[in-house]
Figure 1 (spheres, rainbow, N blue to C red):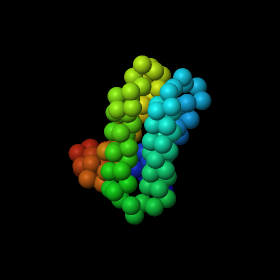
Figure 2: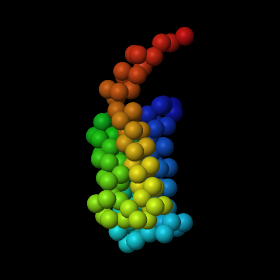
Figure 3: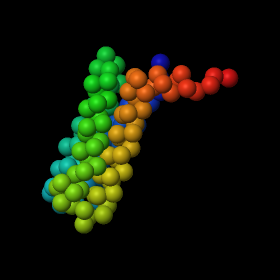
Length: 119
């Protein structure tokens, strides 16, 4: 069965792979390259783990939120804000990853289902 949270975790896998492979078409520094590769791979692996081991529950979602936030702040921390493509990739993928992970949390999913009227 393909549930909403599985779709969210699949999106996280796609986002992580996109970030990890973005150095193929972006101009980066070594710090930017490794930030995108490592955090992108962690996001993708966490999404895969969540898809195939749902028993991880919220722990995997919290890890994905952390990786998304770390990717978002990486252009400032690793000092590659001058490389616009790498920076925007980190910012956008980081924010979308964190939002997707928050939306996949069981307590958020439960609230959304209770709040939405069913017709």
